[in-house]
Image 1 (cartoon, rainbow, N blue to C red):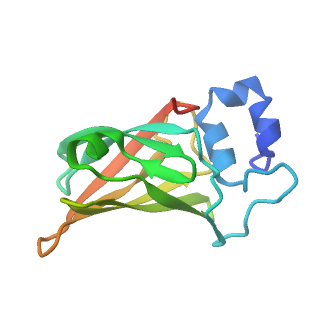
Image 2 (image 1 turned 180 degrees about the vertical axis):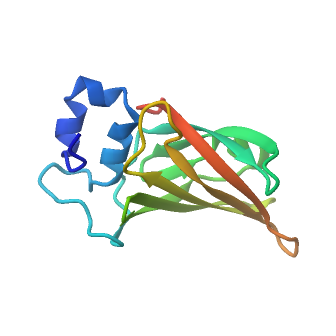
Length: 162
């Protein structure tokens, strides 16, 4: 598959709609059919992943499962509904950077009572359907306490958020 398909071409290809590869193609584009993807290392805040959802599993440094959540991309913001509901973490603006082999995504979520969560994600351009399509870290810091760092892996949950 050509990894430089435009967003419009990807959205009109039915096989692409069901594959995590579609998310990868959209992550690497600026979202407009007539503009090229950013050069390697270039950062964009364009909402290139909006409407995408990933089911994620968090693990500690020893690999023990911790919790699960969904990562949702909406209106240029990254949302973790589980910790938003439980701890009041607001959605944070996400940034996408094109890197060799895929894209990186970063976002900071803030809670008035529970500090902040830094999300750092990688989406490889070589991901295939049925394989993990996203990986990264969640780093939770709260005034004066040691940071809690969890690894995460996830798969495409749906192509569009509700």
